[in-house]
Image 1 (cartoon, helix red, strand yellow):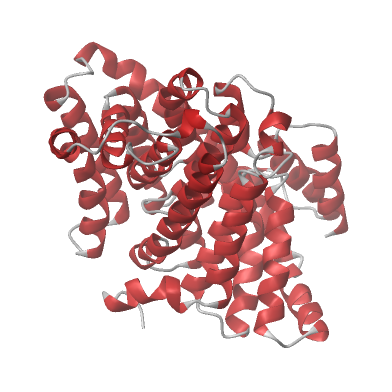
Image 2 (cartoon, rainbow, N blue to C red):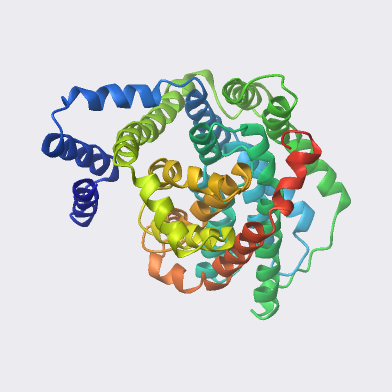
Length: 428
């Protein structure tokens, strides 16, 4: 175990890309501690990727790419503007609601942040909003794509834990929306103190709301198809992802007509390249996790935790701290693939519900996407806003604090997140 951890940390310090860190650490460990042939690495990678459920990932990614190119994002922004554009600090609220809407379609935090930032930042600058605070709000709201279904992160952790994807999806609805509401509240408080540029002169217009709602209805049909189909047992999560991609193509090609047939090859290529990067990380992380399990790390860690405390509360505190630290330095899916298999059996031994535990991990990972130095969502938001990450991080204390408050609530009050899947009889 010492060799693989040393290699992992050493390669990270040297700045080696994470996917190669995982593979190289496994290779060095096999060469120095066993007589197992290196072909085992490729076999384990293939075994880790040979999953029908994992096919949902490229389809969800394609759905997100199509959504971005097909005008779906812009129509959700227009709807959000009509709904809440008359409130003080309206553009910040629009960013929050739009992020929630896109989260229910794409399942990718960084993609949502890029889409919302690209659309909102020109308006934010023109209205002289605080660009750094706005970028922080967009980053934190966009990070909720990992919590609000459908979520790629939830698909991965559900596969690892052999749990119901539908139940895990529904467990994220209340925490995700609660976080969006609190981020909007923080935005309102900031806008009230921010100056006259945040005041709105345009009154609420019912006709505009009805017009933009009608235009956005096809876009809002996508989460209904995805989540409703899974919960209703109409199709599996993988089939739901395929249906979502096909639905997005139909809407973009024949309803909004912002994509042409000739655009499809480039969209497919973009989705394939993103999917390949994600799948490669999953493959190498599978080998790394197998070596960790072979070294009996879960048993040793469980014994150590029980020697410290037999309290489930202390265990959950430990998990939160651990994942907050990991999220600062590691990509979300890799972190889950490496650490979650170690902790899930321990959580079960403490009597913690697996859906609740998985949600806590996912929310921690979402928080990790906005905390430095990794903070991919915050970095994307800063980049689109043409600001340095440090400038945006300085204004992100309040939004990140809101996310931390929601994390504490769902950690110690599991019924808040579990009542919806229980109500729909997806879990006991």
